[in-house]
Image 1 (cartoon, rainbow, N blue to C red):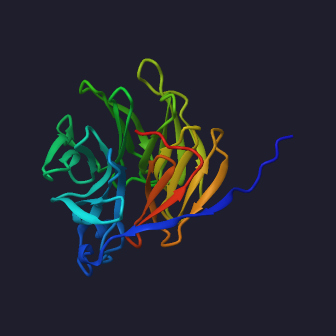
Image 2: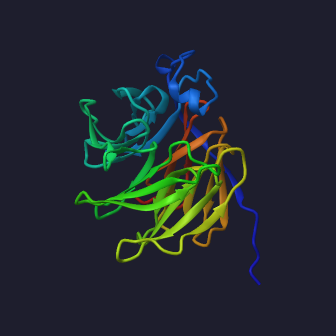
Image 3: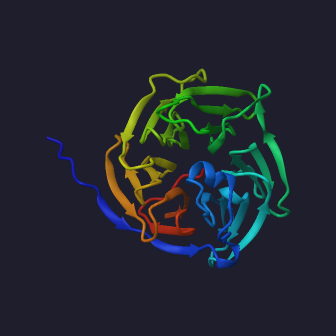
Length: 299
């Protein structure tokens, strides 16, 4: 008989917090009007990703900013523009691709802060509001188009932008698609359905289609799963945006551990650097980390 156990709780630690001089205290933003009930929040961190020399890059959605955090925890501003940047990945050593809610997929040069459009519209139609992305080893880019979808309007979309430029619509019925992760063999795409408070498992077929999409894990809480990542054992790490933790799910979808925030409850996204996992906690503008027993996959 297989005995299921309660997942162990592992505390995370604080790596660095946004300095006071970068915080937009008391400043109004359109993003907060739509997503935070009009509160004047001083920042909302997302999109962590590492460069080759160990600098961590994060986005600040409501104020259109991208920051670089050194291995010592020092912050510097990389870019500031009229947008709402969320998930990010590196396209090359010095170029980021950014999922921007307002502008679509963007390119950002980290040395100059120059911002340009990679994919702003689909067939002359604006996106609902792109959110996050993951890049396969062959260069295919998967991204979510979340907008304000949810259980009342389950029309969020997941796209694949092929390395050659072709855009495929894989899913069009997700209640608030958010973070993405690819399995180690890249035959399965995991999609965080935030307002459904669950993670979908999306088998990727050899012909490029998807089939037998199912629900992999269900959470609880006032929000839902956000950013995700995979480690070398095919464990799925899921940041939950209202529970203040990262769930560690085994290959069968069973929880193995919960990485708990020592700061706020809004754990939004995560990135591996070897065996260290770094997490954005957006309520307090803090970067958390945990030491793990397995390295993560770069994607």
